[in-house]
Image (tube, rainbow, N blue to C red; front, side, top):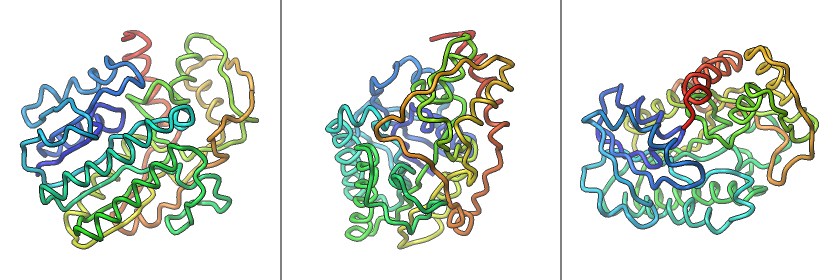
Length: 320
């Protein structure tokens, strides 16, 4: 099957490309190497895929460059987005351009090419500070607390519009705090491990009691793959589905685990919660279990150990 993966050089996108290539699919990958973090990291993410004859790469922007793609496409997995909750507060227009306009251009491309299958990477951020936990797909998501979250919700609405008008089958996947090897350097676990291994102080936002439903990358990849196969096997579908671990971890507990795994003493300082941050994320994953047998298998301790091992070998000892 020919699969178009947008945002193929990022953390999740590049991991997904490698996963799909192992399953004998042909992948057309696109990425614009957004300067949010160093291009060299993204090029390293793609290094294995670029050696594979079943992978074709286009460096382009989803907002204006998709017409150059010549290959036949069976499925689109739309991962590309301008990332980061806090930076979106500083530059909301950039997020609107990429995450909303870019998604519309992907959908226009699908309409023009007659591509009927879409898996879209949304985010748990759309739930905002939802007081009901765990978060269910049927919960109202009308109160996003960051521009990033509002663009992800807007993109979900766009996918429904194109499903309704042009019969594109859609699965919107709401990812919950994905972590693991290749994680973006701006994210908490990456920053904590870097500072802990360098015996530096880490800054904890809030009182340490905020919690995240950390989901290991391998579980996300399996979920995306199962969702894609579900889409292939069904017609006239529009589904919005949580992909999480269903087990929130408090910030203080996360830091304690990192100290245990690294064998380092934690030096930390607490400061105020940041604008746009939520108190907790907690995924109800029953819909994913019912639709495509999603079952996260990696515990937080196992996942953190894998990340620390990867970071030590790949980053700490061999910095870009």
